[in-house]
Length: 194
Image (tube, rainbow, N blue to C red; front, top):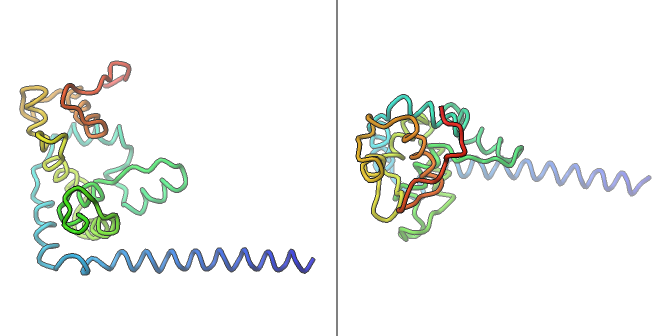
């Protein structure tokens, strides 16, 4: 009986310490943005995100079909959903942070610092919307080494401007974000696209 009580106390203390440690680490990360960027750099980046060109309304609708509630969910909600369902989708704020130069590790353009990316994403969410972040992401997304941004990808694959694209073509661009290809858009003939 005594060993069961000790085991129970041990488990409770371990859980308590784990939860408390997680909370402390979360608040540290969320507030440590000043370690790797200045207020001026943050303001400049937030301004770029806020003033990125808007996408067609149909694109947002199709993006949310592919990633339900992503434009209305915070990064914390996405992390929580990922922990529970093992279905983590990067929020537009996290995508924006990850493709920005600010999140690069030790000035290496190929390595991303997750700490910087998550910290910047939380900071972005205080100043911008997920929709604004998605606009900036699509303006700056590197579909491959030579095709950057939604305007270039729509020209390369469809020979049209973004506003002229059909729902199917916009859906193909969303698919390209998951599986970039220089040869062709991913085969999605088996999918039912409205």
